[in-house]
Image (cartoon, rainbow, N blue to C red; front, side):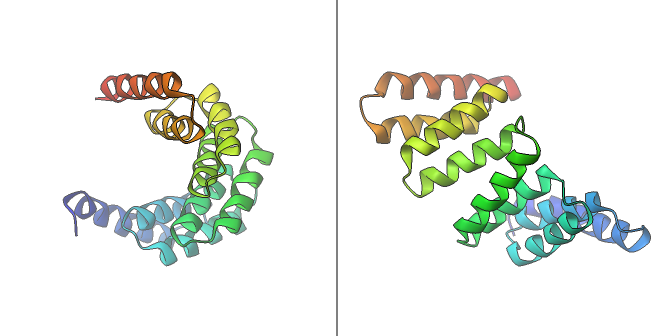
Length: 162
């Protein structure tokens, strides 16, 4: 277990205890799902996120997180459905656009990836999104300047966060 993973184990126990003690609360399942995903316990994460979404079907963050878990499990079509549903529920939810763009990049759908990443970055710039878009620009060719610009922006965002 990695050093950072050890810090997540108490959080996992706390969310599990909160679930035991409370009425069904989608937020506790969602948070435990995130922790399980960070611990690479994808089946457990998926189970928690399914419960969170069953309890609150209009929960864009849980849908986007479940999409990430589906990507890790190689279930790309399921991930795309979750990202689309999250965007349908909240078109301004940047993370869903960025994750969808990253999924298209994994599948080498470069134009679709660029469109989704552009939307996500316009809504909420993040270093990861800029780095992903830089890769997409490089794969599309003739976008070297844009790729370099995105790498610089990502670096400045990382620096600002630390």
